[in-house]
Image 1 (cartoon, helix red, strand yellow):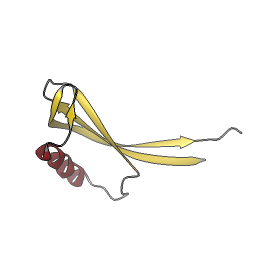
Image 2 (image 1 turned 60 degrees about the horizontal axis):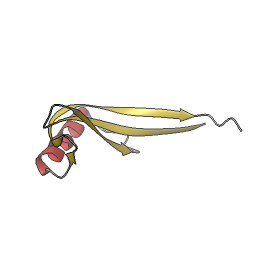
Image 3 (image 1 turned 135 degrees about the vertical axis):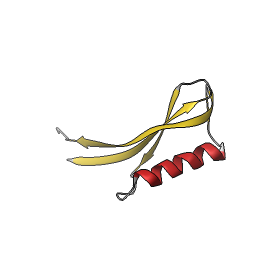
Length: 72
């Protein structure tokens, strides 16, 4: 059984659509404050552009855990 995790950060873009950035293998000790600060920095750095424009607002974030059971 293999278990993987990723951090999924959701932003609103210029046109009001949600955009997601995923990071594999996030640090296990992430806090809400750390992630919010990182997301704010991503917006401020203006390095990502979506099909609907720049990232404008922090919507939310979550850690997604996936477990894979090999059948054969």
